[in-house]
Image (cartoon, rainbow, N blue to C red; front, side, top):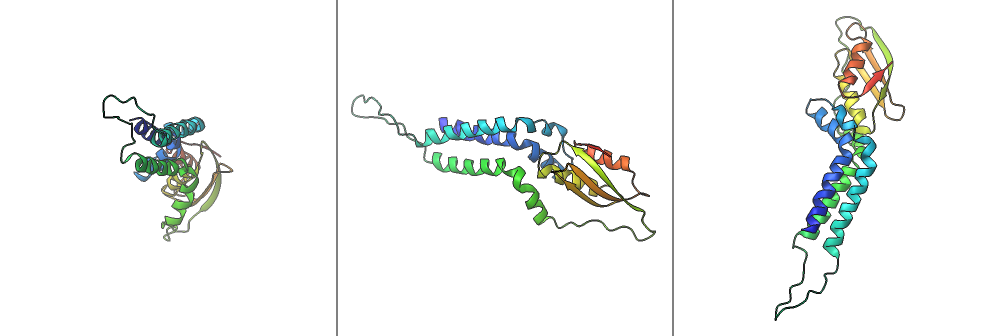
Length: 198
């Protein structure tokens, strides 16, 4: 029973610790857009990671501790034992926890490797009036945030290219002035839950 609490608790807190990055990615993939509430968890990530480590440690302690000798009554002496699936499930849970905790660090590279979409080409019916604008974005904490913002920009009609950088917290957008205004670009970013400014 005790190792189950450790396993489920560790997975649950790992999910909460990474919700700031997993939430926007999942919702963007569903076409819903990122929820700003998920970003509220980012400052508490270290706390949730610590709780995850403690719960996982408790799971290992209960699964691998040396059982105490029980007092025997009569001929039968019952000793506590780990369930048959306790240890394998603990290791599976550990793998899940590691995947969840490291998600913000590998998702951006993984998405870039499998992303087969390309930048939309400008329409050839009339010459495009392409301009470039650099937007400052606040609230991004990981590669998942970058992908959510970039996807929202590229889905905006008139945008031909978008580069989003996490380190500088900026987006460089190439757009057709005749189809989209700067304010619409800022609004597209704000719908993902992040704040943008010129």
